[in-house]
Image (cartoon, rainbow, N blue to C red; front, side):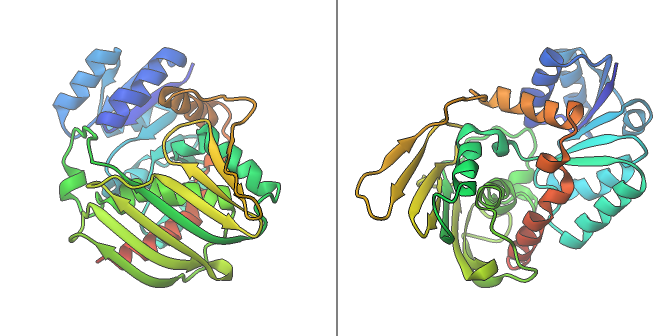
Length: 317
């Protein structure tokens, strides 16, 4: 049987990963580690795990999940990459494109597999929208609009979301939204995007962010993110023949309007594999540690996203 180490015992680890892992997967040993020992002990007690150091995890665990704030990912990855390890790093992977390339190269040199936790790829409407785009129902993508916002109520166990420069709404919510957009649309990210404008409510970590930029083939993208006010919470892909709205939260429907019709169609997939957020986490863990599906969550797949995030984030400094 395999062994698992979880680094970072905040909300994502304790409310989701540990709950899913201990219920659905048969690990003979689960070691948890957090810089705040009280969080490690609380998680270990709740889920019958073992408190350990980073060195303990390196020594005893074949599988590792990194659930720490984004600014720690580079250092922790460098300290955990070794032969035979399978590492799942929570999003955002890294915000520095050059460092991401180096990390992936280091992992390949050490026969270590790195995956990135982008949970929305398992949402029913996301998988369905990707199929619709692949079947050319929209035609060529002409424009993309992203709006996601609500009054922030996430109960984080640390303060990085309000004090860390990488804790703003762009690295947090934006990494989800931008990955979903790229994953569904298949639009390519140029080495250097044409950035029209960016706007935030304050210095990082900001709670509101908006930008207008162009991807490959001059496809315009508008993105608006907020932790302060409610937005329409959808991604809109406008194509030659039709427009599709993909809701942000986990759901089983999307809206399609063909340009020559007035009617807005509500579409649902015939089969819905994911009914709630816990099922999505279970599928993510299975995809990484059992199936080792690098084509879906392998770190190299997220280099275009990292490149885009890097360029947008650097513009905020």
